Image 1 (cartoon, one colour):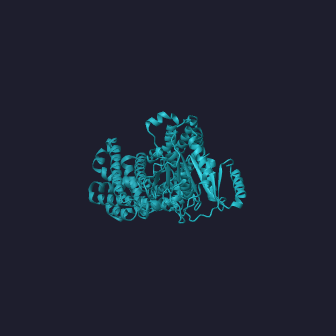
Image 2 (cartoon, helix red, strand yellow; image 1 turned 90 degrees about the vertical axis):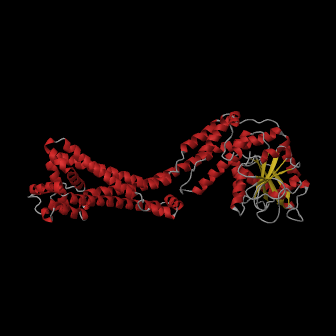
Image 3 (cartoon, helix red, strand yellow; image 1 turned 120 degrees about the vertical axis):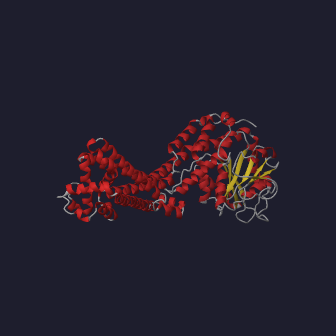
Length: 585
């Protein structure tokens, strides 16, 4: 039951309502709020409260509408909850005293005939049961059976709602959400405190059956205090709530039980509920109906918060995508601005041609230079390999450089947002540091991509040459060289400028282009160059997409569907009329 599921028999016996609740529980079982967006702490708390109430109350209570009534005794620190429970039972079943917090583990007091129901994990399945003498350990539920409790009723002594221990406060809220009935205990000195009224307003919003026990009231102030408490209840939409007053008594010790006549009105009221099957069923139906009705507002509020999560995730994806789009633009610029045709590539090009003097007088001697280049294509394979290696190295360096820059910009962009900063902090310092630069695997991927691209370019040359019988002989021994010239042409765009205008690197491209044009023709060279450039860009884009996926992978958990939540809540609302009536025990 810890995951909110019910068995097949339950689903069939309760019709579509139980199945609808189970489907809603399944939707709530996802990680709905992984990002630090808005008041995410409140969103996570609301989710925890809702799933807890489904698991601890709605699903088990719907499965067994006629199970014993669970009354949770809750209230502020020092209100005398444990003393009240012991006094109602007439035995020390739960610890009372001056030390705070007194209630370290909640104690459930039941009639022996009902013990089996509560020792099994029907209600509050996440709390291990403890029986026997002694106090329960924190995080457990102590179950004490006694004939002093009427059959059909169980009293649960809860921790303080304002405990200094956060776990106790959370457990108190969980227990109250699992109750059919609240016995809310306060004192004359603290009945107007805000913390109790926050819980009481929750009871109003969820139509939880409620009674208030006002303790430690000076006898001369009984009427004024009771009247003022009634006014506050009326103002907070809780008019008509039963109120029991316990006068201030001079007890010999904090743990001393209250006299039987003082707590008799409360005991008589509880015994009346347990003895009257119809009254008990009305309490259960009221609380169960209120909890179901509250889903109509609580679930849409969670769905709206989920939408904020998705919007935040989209923003982070956009920031990462923008960084890597800029990297692709930088690579595009690097392909066209001639940068790659300088440095080592230029030196190897000059070795390939045979002399730097060949670059002089480019416009007037293109024909003679073309002849020299053609001769070199056939006769200098070693320098051709060196030129190809230099070009390959330059392309790889450019890709890695833009990838490094993109990673750094993406991390900086995420750190500028609360959600991104929290996500990176959760990933850890080392993981965030690795994200800030290209992945170690990129080098191998880049090497493979550039080699594959070079093979693609050679295939282009072969395919284009195969359609020209007149140049078949030239291409038969010059495919590698012509492919190398085409690769060089990819990395500079002359735009009609002369070699002198775009410098030596541009002249390199012009000369390469002239040789290619002599073999394939002007239009074919332009087409081949564009196809080679497009293919390389596609491969680089795929590499950058893989790098970007390191960031988007961190957002994989933001996958909850707010519409699915709304639809599940709407289905529960539509099945609301199927709530069973219950029957006499």
